[in-house]
Length: 103
Length: 103
DNA sequence: TTGACATATCGGTATTCGACGATATAATGA
DNA sequence: TCATTATATCGTCGAATACCGATATGTCAA
Image (tube, rainbow over all chains, first blue to last red; front, side, top):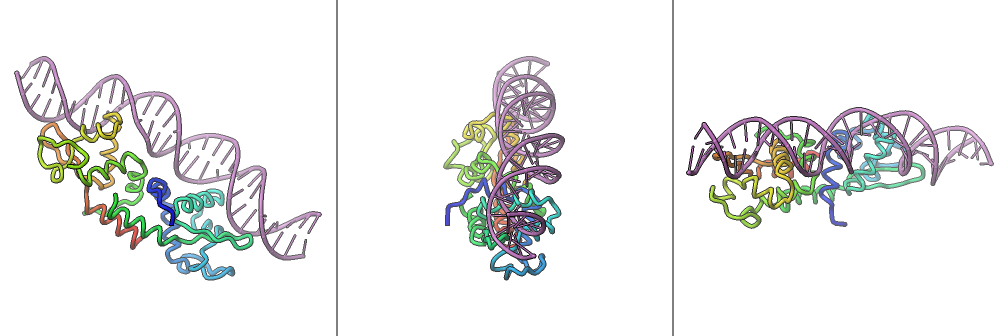
């Protein structure tokens, strides 16, 4: 894994909607409708489902997801015209450990 | 302990200097000159020492410390004309646990 | 009480963020 | 090929942040 950038991460986490997205993606089958593409736990949730739940514009949600991905907190899978985002659990564990030990 | 406000905390952590301050205060005797007031590990480090190390203006550092304190990450002790800041280790542990379990 | 500190607060400016609509890109299906 | 759908990118604008210098407050020492 690449080494993390705490500032980038904390900025990504400094927004209510982005925190919610991370929370929803912890249990995707609980918060999102089932998708044809496959198991949301494994491949992630597509942008439009996340957008609908967030209630913000498509462009805003797309940017939020990219921001979370650049921070390393989300992983992305593209299949055809869909983009699926899922949590990067390892990065979140690493962040937790960083706060506990390094910071 | 009061319940934490993750957004407030992550905003406070979204700045290089403020992260540094937290890091320095983890081992105050390592990063700051000894002070007459007492053990820096116990009572904290005074604002002027932190300002000198940060290399920013007094007003900026004062505001940063207040921001970290409002987020619950620092504790403050006033003795006479000095204000000593120290880490709130419990809050940092709580944050680490929040990321690991709740987020 | 006056003066010298330590710290906090105020007002300003330049940069960044939040959020949008419009548009571009890319894949799919007819 | 053309229209449709999914997502990304661009340009904008008001709000918030990063800093600063100036000033206020509060404490101590003479």
